[in-house]
Amino acid sequence: MVRCLNKTLGVLLSNYCEAIDFLAPKEKAVEALKPLCGDVTHAYFTSYVHNDDLTKLTETNAPLFRNFMDVVESICPKLDRVCLQTGGKYYGVHLGPTKQPVTEDMPRYDDKGLNFYYPQEDYLCEAQKRRNRWSYNIIRPVGIIGFTPRANGMSMALSFAVYLLINAELGVASTPFLGSEFLLDSVDDVSYAPSLADMAVWATTHEHTRNEVFNHASGDLVVWRHFWPQLAEYFGVKIEKPTALQTSVAEWARDKRAVWHRLVQRHGGSADAFDWCTWAVFDWVNTRDWLIVASIAKARRMGWARFDGAEDMWVRTFGAFEEAGVLPRASVVFGLKQVE
Image (tube, rainbow, N blue to C red; front, side, top):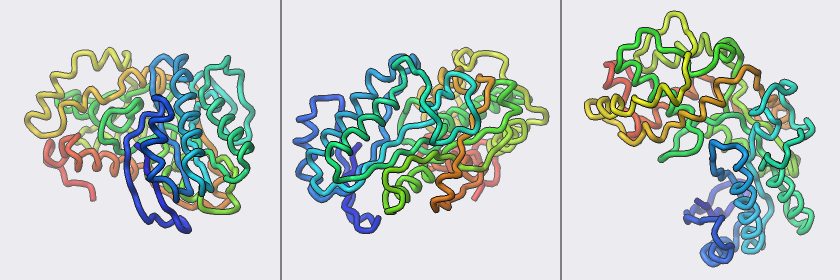
């Protein structure tokens, strides 16, 4: 989805949405967007094509951005700023232990050509130097939580919610944490989608942030042994002594679709939501035995001030899925007082 925006001092003046496939021939995208984008000054790229086989991510995601960049440059004569969202995998944190916390100035690791963020960022800088008439920003979030209206490659908040609701439906006495023993007692953080959008707008509408890279995270670290019971309580699940799930997440989910369908038939929600959950992703994201923390000190030093508390971020995300009818309302399922 491409939004063509007219901006004056960061104020949104118009918004038009057009579905574009940037893996199709670029000429089609140019034809569709050229009449709409003559006054566009800011372009934001947040697309990602997921594959559980991490070795195949570059095959689609590198050309996806390259085509986007070529099209934007050809149809936006007033282009002033381009924002590319990459992520924590830039630092190799998905592969094993690294220096912590990760900072924007850390050198690249030997990726054997598999980290698609490298060709994306390289092409952004190459295009900027070639034209020398616009600036860029790169935002690197950690794991993102937030509402999406349909399935996506990595859906942590929805997966947590469906997992907790299914266990409540089954009467599981103390629902295990959806992660490893190490992570249960480790500090962790997420990127909240509205906050991530806020940083992108902040970075691209200030002169002193031109051509800068910023990590993004909430900054409100949690320890899952203590935070897991807080999240579970939203869904009426009481957890006295948190433990880690002792099986593969994908294996746990194998026979749970019928339970979810039974629950939504009684209480509402989308039957499809179970298949939107990314169970297999948890088997490589949350079963790790190493720390991942992103420093946001650089953004703070340069003036980004937004802060969101951990519980508030998760509860608002759950609430957004409920409002959209993706999840049943916890207050309906369990007769709970809805969180404001």
